[in-house]
Length: 117
Image 1 (cartoon, one colour):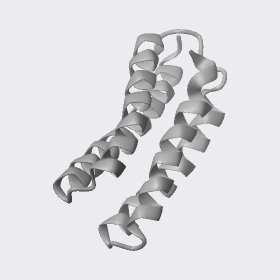
Image 2 (tube, helix red, strand yellow):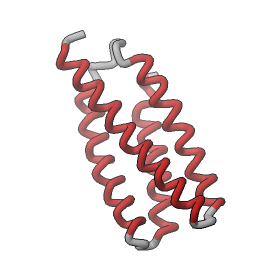
Image 3 (cartoon, one colour):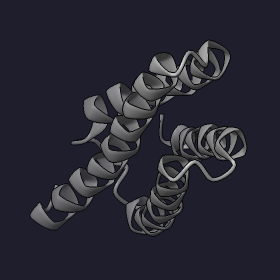
């Protein structure tokens, strides 16, 4: 695998890890606030994302580089959207709606990369 492909693969994985870290932080925040139902819902998304990350880590040197540039663009766009959602959550703007949207983004990331598994 070319060095450039490895760099791109690592960037995709790093993008997923950012979303994962934001989700973990949000889960902690929900737990502290006593919003157990939303935390439980979010945890399901976290579990899916963690499973996806583990699979991708195992395949990072495999032949999934053909799709990576397009996936990377989509992931970067999604990261921007997720970042905005997290900012809004932190500002308490329609918190429940934004949490649900965040969980939906995790599901979209998992679905986007599922064909690579």
